[in-house]
Image 1 (cartoon, helix red, strand yellow):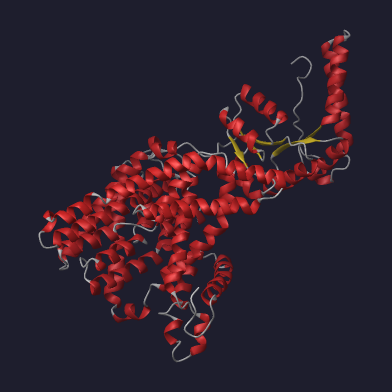
Image 2 (cartoon, rainbow, N blue to C red; image 1 turned 45 degrees about the horizontal axis):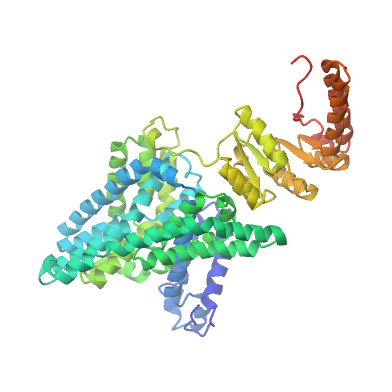
Length: 609
């Protein structure tokens, strides 16, 4: 980071931000307030318009302020890119296709209608047509970087509200490049000779070509190289029993590389990251990628929110509070009203439409990009536009409050079914059985579940096994099930049962401990190496343990008795009796509070069944 004005050193701004993050997140979490508001407030306080404005009279304050907002802005752009990448991981081409009506219908209509209405309002305030159009288009967009984390924090992303909100935000992100091209057209129209000037026509017409070519290259290259890259790193990780840092490095390379490629094509970094996420969502490595990216996303988004707070000039707001606050309220109310009406027009229920409209009413981060472009091109008047940007910043501060208000207003269950045709299939199926380890034993368990029409999802750390199963149409992911985050991402919260089939006793224990910590009463069946391992697993809380040596002996005994002519019913009864005796011995080491756990082993048929 840059050297502070008070001689704070090369990394002073970074230290200030990390210190603020270390204080803000725990404090606001304890107070049950969105950390987003904390980061925004920290940006206002620590920025050049906050304590930084007092540094000249009290130089020691420079040690506690962020002196170089431009570098914070560069990091914050990465935060938005990581957010869009994570959103892309929850999508797929099929899911996007299923949401096309909302994205290209409701979403694009919202951009157009809000741009026209807001632009008309600014024209009535005395702005030129070109300036009013730029202001209207900039403020028509909402903040993906603020809205999505706030809704995720409140658990509102997976329902109808989450789908409609994300569809509109995605349409807005896709509209950024066309809006910037429109700004160029407005500049051309205002220039001598207007749109008839050949050079300006050529610049406008060819503006879309690099973007289209760039996106095509990102998609083609991604489809060709992503799987081989991840497979290579996964194999290296399996051979060395480590390699976590290589996986993290590859994830970072993909996010930043796709973003830079999109920027080179004239699009936003976020669009490139979103496309990269969608492509990885089609692979078996998506869950492992999510876990590795999550810490970077959270930290960099914190930088983004601090950067937004830094941009709020408190003194400028104090100089004309009526205009700044009034305009912020007017922008939010007008947009929310228009979005609510459009959502109802698209068949979305009233309560869902209210919550969607409220969180999307405030302005977004792309407003600064569009308005700054308009000022640089001479289309938007600087003095008035700076005031509008202050109002946009203030409106972004209200997103957590609007989300809370919207959730309160839509607390009763929604009865409308207008989103049914646009509802994408769930990423993780509720009630599925989770199979950890998809080798020889895991495949057989999966085959038997499929034969009885029981849905299942599998996890394995062998890239070759995962690739082969994927080709066979199995819903399987690469990842370490010993990590609680991986189990949660794969849907352990709604899983019907968990079957651990790995042949490494230590790893089986690790998965059982992680699973039991997340769900204490879930049916959990584990493969055991021998009798001692089975007894240890019962102590860890499994519903049933299946020791290899014991089951092999029982199977041999069953086949022998049947082959020499003993009646099948008697054989099965004696085998089950012997199995129950073994189980009683294994459970003898189980703590008293777990001895009454129901046993639902993978048993054979009972006599007469």
